[in-house]
Length: 293
Image (tube, rainbow, N blue to C red):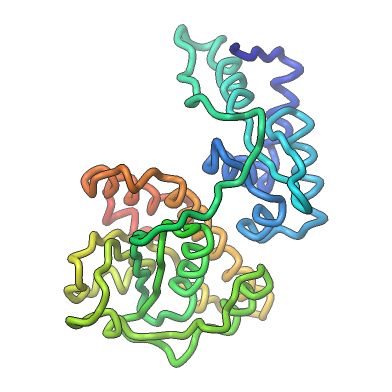
């Protein structure tokens, strides 16, 4: 049954979304449809404090954009696609003759998290940047956690630093990631006859993308997700931390879009343009956008 909004409802929904963090929460949960995320996972992926997050989730749930249920100690939130469809239909009804296409049917009644998948052959992904100290380290952490067994991620650098950047490690640690084994390493570790085959190489800095990558085992597909280097941020410590936070959020947006693809069912020809489009999301470098044009 199609939901209809009146002007009062539409104003309430638009008002709830007219705040940057709430908008990002809803976009994140729309990527996870038909599954949901625990409140703690939403906070981790968007790096939002719990007390702030609670008020934003309540505002979105109040206007029907989210549904929640308790699962043990966790509260699971799921996006209500029908509500978003209804808003689009309301906005389009007065200016065009065709209704916007509805989202695919989803299980809206029972918000549930996606479970970890036992997989003998997960997609093997190598994230590459020059120094392997910031962006690629963060991307490796998020891919492994959000991949839920479907992805096995590594990171490396063409000219690696001696160690990961302290601000990258502290941010990840504060958000609940295990950083005990994280280290900066050369992409040479992923070469040679004994190296495991790779399926995908993602470059996250423009310099690494412009450098000819070696021939990795498995002849993996290569995709560029260019982002500015947070380690290059100048100024006081708070400004530097803010740069790492922006980079982390840009990476989590890309990773969550990626992990919610049915990539096991897609050919490389189908997957490549989708991953390239993900690389053009907010935060992409100008050189990255130019390469994609």
